[in-house]
Length: 343
Image (cartoon, rainbow, N blue to C red; front, side, top):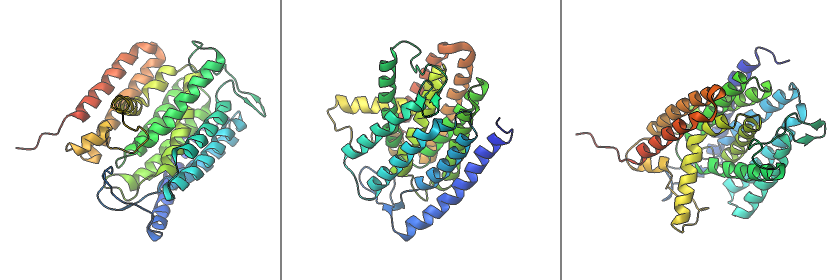
């Protein structure tokens, strides 16, 4: 049985530990001169330590391990924890030395394939997990459902990395998704462990944001953004596989829309989509006069509206989707507009 104090400990304990560890990581990165130097694709102007995601992930791993040990299905998180560790290792090598797309993508595929066993209906050493595991609610046969879910999960891992481009954005989105998922899972009376996992993500992200809010003292780096995308992707798929697919779409809708529209536009223009760039809506907003903090506040405001719609979907179902889509489109249009100079 979950202790009544568990949600408080998951959120506040993760916040405190992440804040402390990120500060230690910052000191280490400065001492070792592990810096992200500005280039023509950067949104910063001075060399800034990169690798702050260590503080987030070294908080999340023990927190999730403790939550898993007290859950009804302790082994459920095992493939996710193992995949997270593997992605942290590969991503840190990429942060330090730079890896080609092949080893990074192969590691992501391996982590996602293993992680599919942690969805409802998956089979672990302790036996199958409850539920049929159909993310797309029976519209596809099981094998196709799993295949499309895996592709979507891979895309989410990469889009979360792509969207980590200005101060506070990835941390703010991680906190929003974690807290939103925890609220929806609690209201829907799902497995309490899902809510605790979400609160731990929110707390760890908020502790990191103390150091990453504009002007950022350090950046997350791939060592944080890639495994965060992996863990959050699992939570969202688990929410969808539990029947709450509308909420699973709405909670991360801004990141999904910005990254996907930008990818499709670059594909249509014949550009190399795997190369770093400054063409996301949030990046263009900073180029057109908005500060990093202003952009992140706008995204967080949208996220609150999306969360309210996700909660409403528990009673109303898919009919709230048009309102969510309209809200996202309005924000994308706002970010695309130049800021008028004061008279």
